[in-house]
Image 1 (tube, rainbow, N blue to C red):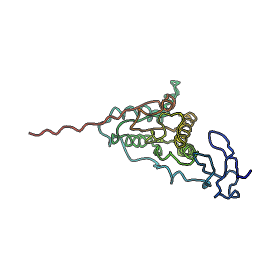
Image 2: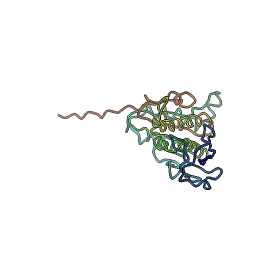
Image 3: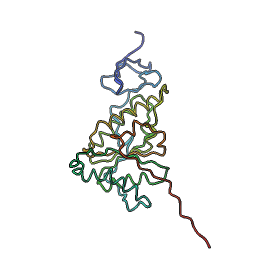
Image 4: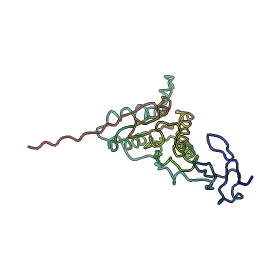
Length: 249
């Protein structure tokens, strides 16, 4: 063969024989090294570092946030709901075991920007003494094939290592919008990341003290597969709060 070729594994799709870019020295491509493939041709065009520190490159981690429910005004209904679906299972898992019902895994907070979604997520982490791991969905949209899916896996590994923990995924619509057939290479990578997220949601046990909170301004474009019970067990709306009128004499 006149072209250099190697066997690579793309999770979760399988193994592929791909071409190596002419600028890559084949001797630098060693077993189990991490590589980047072009979206359009699957050509290996970059050798990646063995490990990317997710704490530095992707996530914000707080051991226990300092936000409290008392800091939040006008969201009594939303506070009550998130206590039921997140705080109660973390603090009193025995209640669910006694009743023989599964603990909720996750909740979706939806509504316009600036309505208190992030603040409430931090507050429930504070009141449950959970490590708060925050990531933006847009940061999971990567240009290299398989990188977004790998980051999702690392996110859940970190959550297990820091349990009890809450994963807060803001702007989830960046990767969780409805899937379209025949999308571009970039769309395919987003779908690959989304599928890995679904796999992770299906694969962890709610009893392991890991909860997932997602937030979006666009619930109307989210994929129904993401919102299925057993993945997202409650949807909490955050309406735009109107300012009180100022009366003048």
